[in-house]
Image (cartoon, rainbow, N blue to C red; front, side, top):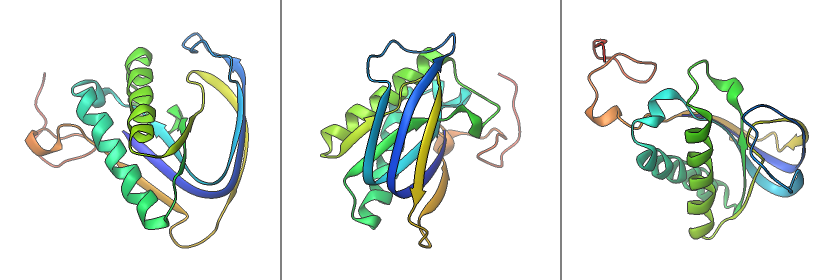
Length: 157
């Protein structure tokens, strides 16, 4: 999973055109003030342990939100962060899981619809921690493969 966090004064978005993977939705437009936008790209390796991926993402978002003393989060699907994309149905399951687990943890959460081309505006806060990136690997602790996340030898699957 690749994540790009931006602490913003405000974000506004509108889902404009659905791709062949677009989820059905009636909520195509939204906004939020003083929040973290978590641009999120679910990758192929995330399919191995989707539940662990959801937990790891939630933990990382919570860490960043706690540092910034924020309770507002926008989960923004953003396939442009990687060339190794997960299957769309698994990516959507993971993003919905992240949304749900953050809400259960007491956060106000909006999730931009999955599989849509989006029009959006945001205004970054511009402080030293306003833009952060993270890479999360669901198998890093038990893995001896060489992948974008770790440094062991590559093994064929």
